[in-house]
Image 1 (tube, rainbow, N blue to C red):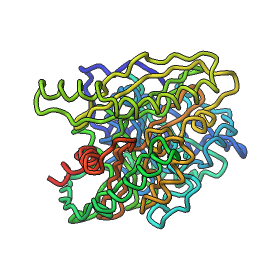
Image 2 (cartoon, helix red, strand yellow):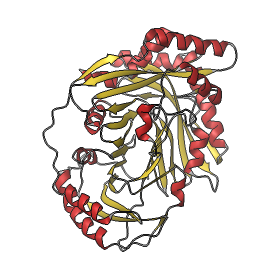
Image 3 (cartoon, rainbow, N blue to C red):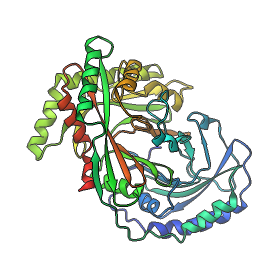
Length: 453
């Protein structure tokens, strides 16, 4: 899924009208296309003038909207509806049907998996069951300078309903919307409970059961009216230019979204790239302060130790899947809007037969979001965290035959009606201080805190 970056001089046309003209043509093609056999999909595609996918998505009726943009802004996909869904890995068994229209691109399946698949889902996450791998009915994609509108058909597709939905896109316009104000309600179980969890994690580290544990907490907000997840994502994206942007809408009023700095892996053909991200400092108020904070992060033995645990795990996981491996000799600074991290890049040439499901099984979860050893850390999190993470810190992204881009869903929030619950975590190692780690999670929550101001 690689392509050249979008040039700065590109002018975007009005998304509803550009998409609407193509949608009317595709609606007619949908009604005439052959019916795919069981286990097959067909893709009908049209090239478009440049449009803003997120702008278009805001005008789409809520309920099944999805969005993903990679960190370099080379790939951006907005989608709605369901053509097919399955457990991740089973999508590889779907076959492309013969189509009367040759597509420029293959389909992108949207991936959203829970952090801890062995934990019973809490009620607030049950709307997201069955969302682990979804082929959307309608897809608007920008890949480099190429913009396309596509529909996906299966043998179960209701042609009349899909055609009607496409024609409705031609008349839908984004109206003037007053975004509801957000008010902070609570910091989850509070700092006292956080401190108890940190001390419990440190006790297990001192006992030798763990080397690191990544604890998370929540912060809840209430709005003065129902929240539009696309509008919330747009506001987050405006404040954080670097990061993977994602949205999973399970039903009207139920969505999960975020702008995350962390890649689990990307794949282009047989080349896979991953990275180890850990250690945190806030951004400085000016260039000098920012540089000094970055230098203190690079010099911190505690943060370097925490980050090396992630490097070690990523290196071992990819080595088992690869014929060759290349790892950065030293970490670099990954600077974001509100925080900066240590990051080490890893690249692998994959062995024949290794697929995206194998990479997820090997890499997820990393010590950056769980701890080390990973299995022991997950067990400890079930004891220490008073909530179900659900999709938070799980794999999220898109996969296709030719490539994949999977991020780790941190710096994220769940929306339910007029409520927003944001998540943030911190890595606990020997020498960690509960109050300092609480402040670190506060820095990570700033993107959502700014929505309330």
